[in-house]
Image 1: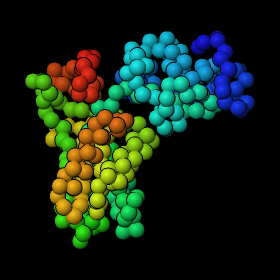
Image 2 (image 1 turned 90 degrees about the horizontal axis):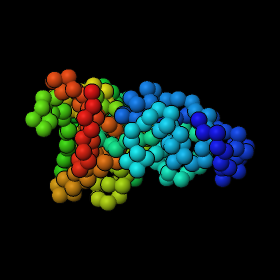
Image 3 (image 1 turned 180 degrees about the vertical axis):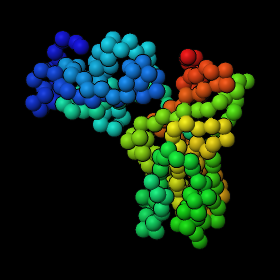
Length: 98
Length: 162
């Protein structure tokens, strides 16, 4: 986990930079690489892009962020969205349903 | 989840999306759609997407469908609502299955009802096309020779694994 503390833009107690506890969900290839479908993560990452950087290192994830979409609390979001305490962040490989 | 249309659901919220792990039952969905769409619908177009037993010359033994359920329900519902706004429909519904599917199994079903067939065909087609790229669903192929790999969307290279 990164020791770097980046202030969050959020106006809540989690913005103190002490790190936030969040849930990360993985699907498809990422789930296999991470070895889990869900984990609790204590992070000081400010944005979901930063968080993905941390997790890529931790789990040796093979997919570049540019090939993924990201959802926060079951909503597709931008990579620059900030992370808040208790958020559920999901990284989504390219879809292949139907 | 039970498949039930309500007459009160006619209008903006009429589009219905269901995600399920159990075997799909298209006659039930078609009848449910017909029940809300009649007698104004002169056309009901349905599409069924089935598991094929081959891909690029290789035998497919089975497919594993994985979804992000919370988001898939939301996105499926949103797609139906958007398609509904673009066309004059009497009814619109879709079902996506997840889990282990064998060749021949129905993986996805879409039904569109409209006064005229052109509208129903167009709406049905738009829904299935958008599902392919916008629904958070992934499938993993298990080939007869034991190889397994995640299916990549059309236009992207396939990632060989296992």
